Length: 337
Image 1 (cartoon, rainbow, N blue to C red):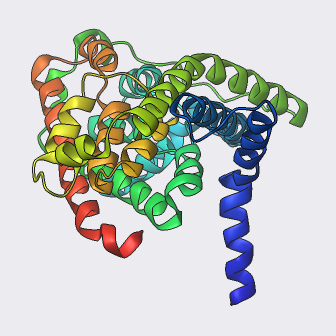
Image 2 (cartoon, rainbow, N blue to C red):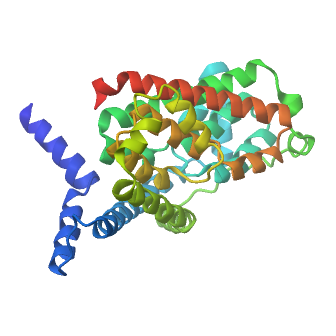
Image 3 (cartoon, helix red, strand yellow):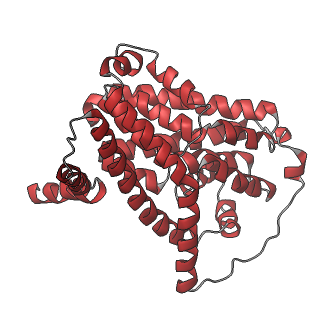
């Protein structure tokens, strides 16, 4: 058992966490006569390390996920989802969202396509919630920074929000609140062409480059904010706003995150820095969920497809679910970290 634990710790710290890379960067900076205990140098070290680690993991993960995704294009996904009913269909849609490495804005065109293809509205909303909030890439990145227990619980709670949110929307029969052009669009039911292994590799390469171009600016912004928090903002400030002494910290973090735009790869460095400064785990994860799921640009895009009442219901369901999950994580923090 000790051997297995040592192997897992090595995998989590050196492969996923890339602690060796951090040591290498510190050595290089020291070789140039720079002291990493200095705030400016420490910020540079944090920035270089996190950007390189996230980009390396991102490109590898998106490549693998894209190969998996090549077996599940929209036409095939529609057929798979069509075989299920009730909460089972919502669960499958939420799970399908985990293999789509999209931000909230990128998920909306697929949501529109699924809805216009005739899939139940609740099912498509389960997909819309889970796709930006939970994916395989976020699972691995969270494992590298926050540990295995936190990563798996984050994914499980995210899937629960997606399934329950979609189910509630389905039970409320909100179809009349979808814009008419979506419902009347219809879809062409065609078979997905059979791809060769080479074509799948080419597709995965293109998806990796496309996703990298989209998210890289947000990685830079997220890591930059994380470096500032990590090295410049006093711990007592963060602890007073987002620590255990503020019972409204989860609500505050969620409301702050809602109007922002980013994806899981850009928000994880911010979460890491906030935790280091004394913020509670659930408060930080609520912020992450709000940013990735309820960004203002994606809500503007979604408004083009659904009417205000349905949009407001979607935002309310996600916000309440995120807040509940945040408080649950805060209660469980001492047991999982």
